[in-house]
Length: 97
Image (cartoon, rainbow, N blue to C red; front, top):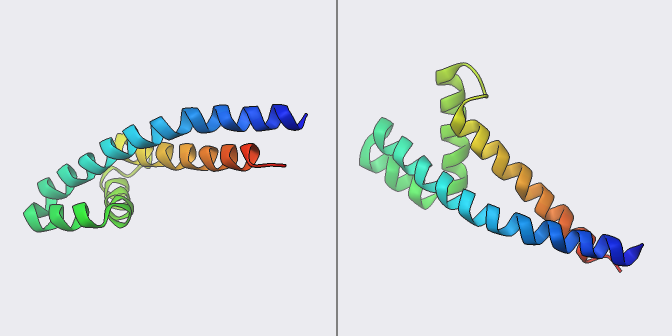
């Protein structure tokens, strides 16, 4: 059974890491574009330098603007967080002794 959980963890991690890399890059660029459109060059520069804080800030702003968390930007950020948690679970499973 231990071998199965270790293998399952490795499979989860091997799927999660590429998704995190690609989705992280897409969300980061998307955040910078949103910041530039709303706040100009200074907002885009700050968002570039502080990606996680910027994604939280612009996610809340998008949520307030649309009135729902079910907008494409918020769903992408939530999806990233879900994959991040799954990747962490995969690492924990793969690292079990």
